[in-house]
Structure formats: structure tokens, C-alpha cells
Image (cartoon, rainbow, N blue to C red; front, side, top):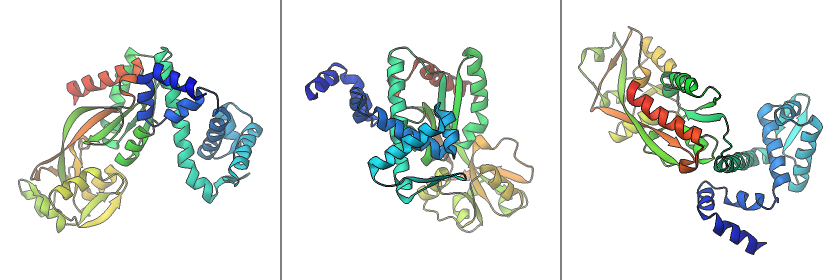
Length: 328
């Protein structure tokens, strides 16, 4: 079999080089000979059951009976030699081993899907769903208009939007779980990266605060004033700003929501920094001010499959670049 595999890889060198880049060369190699069909089905059944919460819902999602899902998971557990989860009327509870293996199995399922999509794109069988990962400011300010206008050009397209922090977005890209992703540059990801916009980072202070009377807010002020911060997994921009200027912020409040931060400033709990993209229609009780020294972030777009992306994904990427140029 090895000689046959070597001939196939040689014949499709560019394709296999790309698959290796995104981490699915082994899967591609095995699927070519039908050796992972049942295993991937088992992984998919387990991952879907966990995501859906019950075996019956997993069956509906996969187009299988509940009994078939149960059998797939049970056979997987038998092969592994231990239980992955406890299944009862209340739902599914992961075992310790299940918690450790779930991310790995999820990655295999996602990469298999990416492999199918690459092959479909090569054969001009495009998926109508475009999967996009985004952080909150782009998701709120840009994406609704972008999707609406793109849908007028391509009425059959569907969108699957995954919101998350910067770390989650990079994981989506590197696992092949999305077609396009908005990221903060620079970043280390697979795929093609397109710079989109330089977005200023600004200070938010209560209008009654003494800092509201100065021209610009010194970044050093964040060492003394009570600071409102995002949770660490979503706080990439402000942490980068403070780190660049050797400032240790006096963080008193932590939240996972950008707009909750603004509300806290409005109620005189402290000060914060936010990207300008988020700051339309801010309350009159909050003053938006420049930082000193001035700071900014770079927003980019990642095309996960690069040149191997489907025509529709490429058109969506081109549309986003043009839309940002003309509207942002």
C-alpha cells in the first residue's frame, strides 16, 4: 500500500503540501484508503452528543437514530478501553478521560470537514455556508451590513458566525473550523492574512472625572486610577497597549462584555480603553479621549484555506476588503 500512497502523494503534491500545512495529511492519507471511516463517525457521534447535550438531539443533528449514536459511542469506548461519558435521561456528563480527549476528537472531525470542503472546491461543488469568526466590535459594527449586502449579490449563501476572543478566533482558524476570520495583527495563523484597517485605541472616562478636562489621557494614569478591564482571554488590545508602555494597570473590575465596561465608566466606577470601532453613540456621561502616547490596533482578515478556498469564500473576502475600504 505504501507504494500506491507515494504515487498518489506525488501526483497531488501541491494539494498534500497544503493539507499537511493545516494538519490533516494523516487524515487525508487514511481516508484515501477508507481506513478511518468508522473511527471518524465515532468521533463525530461523540462530539455531537456532547455539543447537543443528549443522544436523541445528536441523532437528529446527524440524521441517525438514537440507538445508532449510542452504538457508535459504545464501540468507540470499547476500542479505547474506558468510558468517555455517562449517559442518562438528564443528559451527558463527560468522564475525566472524555474531557481530555474531546478537544482532540473535535479537531479531527473539523479537519475531516475541511478536507471534504477542499476536495469539493477542487471539483466545483461549493458549500453555501460561509463560516466566519469575529470579535465583538467587528461583529456589531461591520458584519451585519456586510452580510446583508453580500446576500443581495448571492441570495443562496448562508452564514455561520462564531463570536469569540482573540485566542478563540486563532484556535478556530488553526483547527480549520472557519472559512474567514477577523483578527488583530500581527498574529500567527495558517492561511492568507489581509490587512484591513488601523483602528485607534481610545480612553473612556466619566465626564465628571478630572481627567475629562485634559487634552489627552496619559497611559501612565491607568496605574493610579481604578481601571475596568475585559477578561484576560478577550483583553488583547489593552494588554498590548499597557505592555508596550510598561504600565501596570490598577485593575479593579473585570468583565467579559465591551458594553458593560462602558456602562461601568458611565457610573463612575473607573476608566478604561476601547477600540474606536466600538464607540459610536456613547453616553453623554462618558467622554471618549485620545491616549498619550497615541495607540492603535490593526484589524486583519484571515482566509483559512488561502488559494484553496472556494470561489464563494474568495468572493466574500474580496467583498469584505472593498466594503471596509469604502465604509469604515
